[in-house]
Amino acid sequence: MASELSRRALLLGAAPAILRAQSRRERPNILFAISDDQSWLHTGASGDRVVKTPAFDRVAASGVRFTHSFCCSPSCTPSRGGILTGQAIWRLEEGGNLWSTLDKKFKVYPDMLEQAGYQIGLQGKGWGPGRIEPGGHTRNPAGPNYRSFDEFLAGREKGKPFCFWYGSTDPHRPYEKGSGLKSGMRIEDVQVPPWLPDHPAMRSDILDYFFEIQRFDRNLGDIVAAIEKAGELENTLVIVTSDNGMPFPRAKTNLYDSGTRMPLAIAWPARVPGGRVIDDFAGHADFAPTILEACGLRPLPEMTGRSLLSILTSRRSGSAAPGRDRLFTARERHTSMRAGGVGYPMRAMRTAEYLYVRNYEPDRWPSGDPPDYGDIDNSPAKEFVIEHRATPKFAQYFEVSCAKRPAEELYDLKKDPGQLTNVAAASEYRAAKQKISGELTKHLRETKDPRETGGPVKFDEYPYYGRANPQRRQTK
Ligand SMILES: [Ca+2]
Figure 1 (spheres, rainbow, N blue to C red):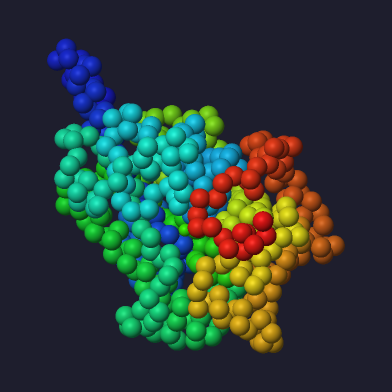
Figure 2 (figure 1 turned 135 degrees about the vertical axis):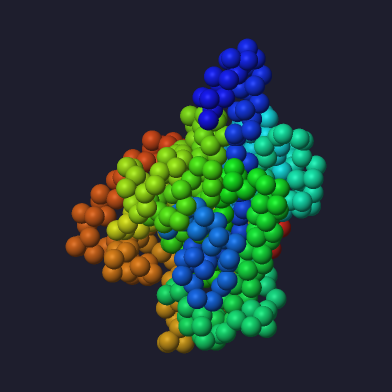
C-alpha cells in the first residue's frame, strides 16, 4: 500500500509532502500500561481461577502473551528506569536504586518519540518514586502528567500519533483489609503460591491484592475502549505489564520468579498476528527498543534490551527465537532499612532449567535488618510470617523470607518450580552451577556492571530520597 502511494505521489509530482503525511499516518500509537506489584501468575489469561482481568485477557487474545517476561529489577524505581532507558539497572548509576534520581544522560524513549513528532502523555505513576531534579529532568521521564487518558486524547494535536504511559498504583499496598472478600471473591478458591504459608489470613490478604489488580484492569479496559471509540485501536501498539512481583514475603524485592516474573501482553492489530502464546524470554529493557523500532526509529547502541518486533510480527508461537533462552535481573538498594543505609546487591540469571542468584553481600540481611525486615512491605502477610517464625508448621516461610542467604543460590526448576531448595552447594550440580555462574559473569562484564568490572561501586553511597529511616539515624 505504501509503495502504491509512493507511485501515485511520484505521478502527482508531490512526493515528499505526501510521503511524509503517509508515514505519519502509518506510525502506530503507543499505549504502555503498567500495574504496580503484580506477579505473572495473577491474570485470568495465565490461568488464575479467582482474579478477573478481562482487559488484560483481551489484549493477550488479540495479540501475544509472553509466559517468560521479567522486569529489570524487583523494585519500582529501577524497574521503571530500565523500561524507559532500555538498559540494565547496573548501567544507570543512581537509577539502580529505589527513591533515587535518573540522570538525563540516560536517554528515555518518550523523549525520543516526542522529538520525532509524537504527542507524549503520562497518567499516574511513571518513573519513580524518586526526585527528578537532581538528574536534570524537568518533568517525569515517562512524560508530562495528565489527569486522565480522555483529557490527553481531547487535547491531542490533530494528526499526531501518541505515546501514552498509564501507570496505576494498583496493586501496591496498603490494601483495604477484607476488600477482596467483601467484593464476593471466595477464600477457598485462592491458589496460594508455594513460597507463602497457606492460612486464611494469607488467603484474605491475597484477595485484597486481587481486588486492586481488578481495579487496574477496569481502568485499562476504559482506556482501550476510548482508543477503540476514537477508531485508532487497529494501529495502536498496546503493552500491558507490571513493574515487579507481588508485595508479599519472598516475592517483591527478590530475584526469584515471585519478584521478577511479570504478566505481559502485547497487541497491535495492524501488524501483530493475534491469539499467540510465546515462551521466549522477554525482558523489560526490550520494550524501549521494541517501541522505537515500531515507530520507525533506531534503538540506541547503549540499550542492552533487544527489540521484540520480529517475534511480534511473526506468526509463530512457543519458543524459537535465537538468543532468547535467558534473562538477567538485578537488585541494588530497595529501602534504606539496614544499618548504614546499605542495600542488598544481587544479580541473577534465569534459563528454562535453572535460576542462579549471586548475593554480593551475604553477611547482610536480604529483607532488611531485624526486627523490621523493612524491605518487605508492611502487611498482614508479613505480620503472619514474622509472628509464626517459631511455629513448626510455618517457620520455614520466615526462614526463606528473612534469614541470611549464602553467596550463591541455584534452583533446579524442573524439580523445584517454586525455587525453595537451594542446590548451589550440592556436588551433582557443580558443573551446572559453574556454567551458569560463568555465563552470568561474562554478561555482566560485557554490559559493564561495576560490580564485575572492578568498580567503582557506589550504589550504597547515592542519596536516598525517601523517608528518613529511624534505624539508620540511630546508627550514625
Ligand atoms: Ca512496584
